Amino acid sequence: MELQGKRIAITGAFGALGQAMVRSALDAGALVAAIDRAPTAPAGIDGASAIGGVDLADADAARGAIDAAAHAIGGLNGLVNIAGTFRWETLADGSLDTWDLLYRINLRTALATSKAAITHLRAAGGGRIVNIGAGAASKAGAGMGAYAASKAGVARLTEALAEELKDDSITVNAVLPSIIDTAANRADMPKADFSRWVQPAQLAAVIVFLLSDRASAVTGALLPVSGRV
Ligand SMILES: NC(=O)c1ccc[n+]([C@@H]2O[C@H](COP(=O)([O-])OP(=O)(O)OC[C@H]3O[C@@H](n4cnc5c(N)ncnc54)[C@H](OP(=O)(O)O)[C@@H]3O)[C@@H](O)[C@H]2O)c1
Image (tube, rainbow, N blue to C red; front, side, top):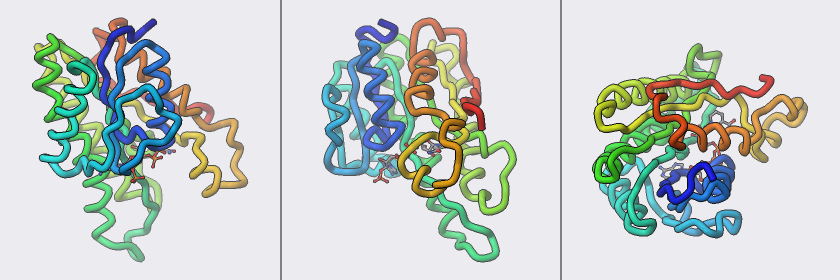
């Protein structure tokens, strides 16, 4: 199994992609700590150590959650930063607060958990950080400014941290999904052809590879995972 015995913390783990990621990591043999803001873990992630009720944009709370994750699963070999959110809003009709919100939820959470995880990954002799960016961040469409800016920030965080941690044998990569086939997206876009979207399990499979020993030479990569979108 690709992640046999690896200790992996996953944020946003109670959400759509998060639950799929937890299941894929468990299936690959990992020990998993599942961190999220909701207080109660969904039934779908049985087998993971659940750490709920954490606002990961708060640096102290993020450090506490990462330390608790490492304690629960006996150390850390990897961190997957999935916590995030989306807003579509034009500049003319929208609010400046939306830009702060998306920066906070999409970038600051990944920043705070990554910073907190470095000590644990170094203690393990190396490791993996995988972030979730977005294909939409490379060129923002109408109404996508705040989201694209926050996810462009995730891309730059990924690149900078990859360079900083190269000599610690810690790789830092990001996947860039297009549209993930989630219940929320189906409800928002009922007329779309769902078969073109990326399945959560397909995205999780790519992340499992990036977490594995086979990906030890890949760092600073921003990898589009776009299905047929
Ligand atoms: N869905 C897509 O089509 C798509 C496309 C490209 C990229 N992405 C990215 O992929 C990731 C997962 O998307 P998804 O569709 O699975 O979203 P989701 O179902 O909304 O899951 C995100 C999870 O992150 C949690 N979270 C949000 N803010 C948090 C915070 N401050 N501290 C701790 N946990 C927090 C959410 O909790 P709450 O429910 O309490 O908010 C939720 O459980 C996100 O980063 C998203 O931006 C998604």
